[in-house]
Every structure is written in structure tokens, then in C-alpha cells.
Length: 268
Image 1 (cartoon, one colour):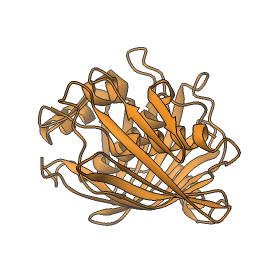
Image 2 (tube, one colour):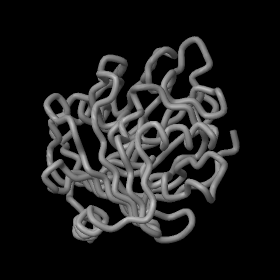
Image 3 (cartoon, one colour):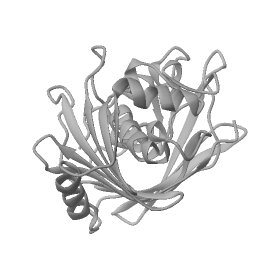
């Protein structure tokens, strides 16, 4: 659904587990810094898991991720950042996973072969229609990333994909496009989708917000990252720290839906 993935060259398989050694200069560290510390984005855990599952279980096709938790940040300020990903098959349709190292568990969740049925795509298409014409706040590329810097999050070109974001009350519509020549992948597409939800908090939340839970993520259709230059993202903020997100193709087809993304202030 998402191709080979940017972490595939760093994965070493061993049975139902994999070890991933991501160089500290990788843009997932260098272009994603929270209070000047290189932090692996929460979405990159998910891409690591998807890339590893494709290698270890080539006949398993993931359609849905469920009940994901991010337990602690993984910092890239060590010479050789290393993570272990372990899978446990649950029947034929599910793979439970944990991401950790010798000391800590950083994330866990479940990959599912069967697509979940959620109403986020319909909601997302309605938000795109509504905010295409009516919104009360607007930020361009420079403005939104200046606001994020004030929140304590510094993004490099790899993660600076929001061209504009329109906000009305608790909804947002963002246009994502290539910036500074950096292409799209699962990690930066989904991270920028999460950023568009964070943009709703501009002016009210001054601290860094980090994901800590995800109810359901559905991969609706294969994504050709090599030839796609723009995406739409809609967000619906349901409570202060709970959001639904839909990633749409430029012509409005649902690609990824996220139901019940939980965020909380960063402790970094």
C-alpha cells in the first residue's frame, strides 16, 4: 500500500523480529527536533513497523493499524540509534507489534489485514468542501512553521510540506506539496497531516504537542509517492486532545484515514 519505504535499507530481519539502525543524520532525526533535540516522529514508528512487516511477512497485506500507543520519545542523539521490532501473529488476519530497545518499549499496536469501516473519509470530504470556501483563519507556509517553532518544534525541509492551512472553529484543511525538492513518503506525509491538526491549536497552545495514541488508521488505496506532488488533509478536532484526520489525493480520493488520534503536551 505504501511501497518499500524509506527505512527498508536499514532493516535486518531475524525470525518474527527485526532490528533497525537508523543513522543519526537521517532526516527523520535531523529535520524533526523538539526543543533542539532530534526526536523520531511518532509516524516513523508506524513506517518502521510497516516496512519490517512487509519484509518479514511478504504475504501479509496491511489495511488497518489499530490501538497504537507511543509510550516514550526515541532520541537520535546517540552514535547508532537502534530499535527492535517484534511481531506476534494473532490468527491469520492480525500482527501485534512492539517497538523498543534493551531498556524501553517505545510503541506498540496491531496491524490488521481486514480494512476497518469508519466514517472519517466522508467527514473529510465534507470538511474539504466546506473549508474550500469558508474559513476564519489562514496560515501560509512561512507563517505556520514560524508558529510551530514558537511551540518548540523545528522542522527541516523533509517535514515542511504544508503550503497553506485554512481553519474554521475545530476543523482544518491543509494543502501539502513538495518543498525544497524533498519528496513524499509515508512518514512525512502522515507527520504533516498530524501537523495540520496541530495548527488548529495555534494561538491557544504554546507548548509542543506529541502523539500518544491512535485508535484506527486505515490505508484506503495504494499511494504512489514517486509521482504525487500534492495532497489535501482535513482534520476534525473532537476534543482538546482528540482528532480525526483524512488524507486525500489532490482530486479528493481518500488515501489514509485516522480516527481518534490522541495528543498531549511534550515532556521534552
